[in-house]
Structures are given as C-alpha cells and as structure tokens.
Length: 275
Image: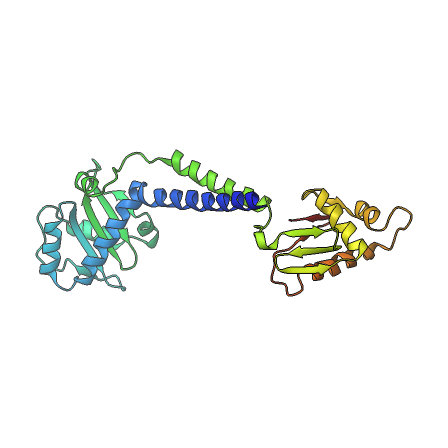
C-alpha cells in the first residue's frame, strides 16, 4: 500500500511539473508571447507619461527597438504625438498614416503584431487598453528579446502537455491516495478490523464480506458474488439487503467521516475495496 501511495504521488508530481513546464515554454519560448511582454511593458510606461512629451521623446530615444508611439484617449483623440510634440526622427508618421492608426477597430487591435511596411522591417504592436500603438524595428526587437523571433519548440510543449495529462489520467484511474494510517487490517482472531488507531468489532457477515473483497485485491466484485460470500447460496435476501449492509459497514469503519473511503460503489456492477 505504501508503494502504491508513492506511485500515485509521483504521478501527481510529474503531472504538475509537465504542465507547468509546458505553460512556461508556451509563455517564454513562443517569441511573440515574449515580445508581447516587452510591448505591454513599453506601452504602460509610455502611457503613464503621455502628457509629458519630452519624457516620451527621451524614452523613445533610449530604446533602439522602439521607433514610434501613438496614444489615444478613450474617446479616440490622439494624445501623443500632439501637433507641437517633438518626435524622434528615426521614424516619422505622415498625417494619413496617423489617421489610419486612429481608425483601427477593436478587432484590429486584437491582432497585436503585424508588419507595418512592405519589407517587414518595421512591426506594429497595438493594444486597446490603454489604447496605444508602438512601432518597432524588427532586428532591434529581435536582439532585445532573449528568444529569437523564429522557430518555436511546439513539439516539446506538446510532449510535456501530453505527459502531464497522461500522468493525471493514471493518477485518477488509481483511485484516491491511501494513507498508511488509514489502511484496513483484518484481525481474524479478534474478529475485528483496524484502521489506524480505530478498531471496530465485526459481525461474522461483516468479516466474510470484507475478507472476500480483500482477496480480490481492488478488483470489482459483483453483488451476486458478495451475496454468496456473505449470505451463502441457500439464501437470497432482497436486493437492498446488501446495499444497506455496505452502508452500515462503511459507518463502522469511518464513524466520524474523517478517513478516505474504503468501499467503492461501482454502479450497476457491485463494489470494490480501495485499500
């Protein structure tokens, strides 16, 4: 029983590690996810100082990847760059281009990243809240982001996810974890059963049923088999007699409902002993 519990704990641990690992890879190895983290951080920093054009201009000039920023109010009015705002000369927006950005729909904002020029050397990053668009130099952005913007190890992510889900499936199929102090021990000489510090007296029928279930080593036992073991072939009680007897037996083995289940009901078939 102890080894079974260790196996199930190992499956649970493996499942968590694999799923956490695949999630980490998805967030960090996916280059666009990694680049989006930078875009989101840059957008927040620039939006907070949108009313201070000089500071915005200075921040833009300090980041080799960031070429241009455009910020709007909730009503769609351009907050930055304003008509008299100094703007870095590395990339200029014409009035028509600024109008095109202003007319972006919410669906366009959801696209996040898109090329902004014919050659794909300039990338556009937009977010709806706060509403801001940033233009990046692709090569400089690729250097700023630790993971290159080409090639994602989807195979590794998929393998880790599959291993995690398989571990959880195996964990679930093995039933609840058995704690050593909850293990059921039958005491033939005392005609009783012990679970940790609890020892309960058993009737002859109780003992026969538990002993028969225990010999099956966790396999499902049909009701007919249990009737034969508990009552004998010469007597067949009504269909509820066995069910009621199992209910009473469960109460004996766990009077304060503080322990894990010991007898599992398998609907339409019968019962099985979990430990």
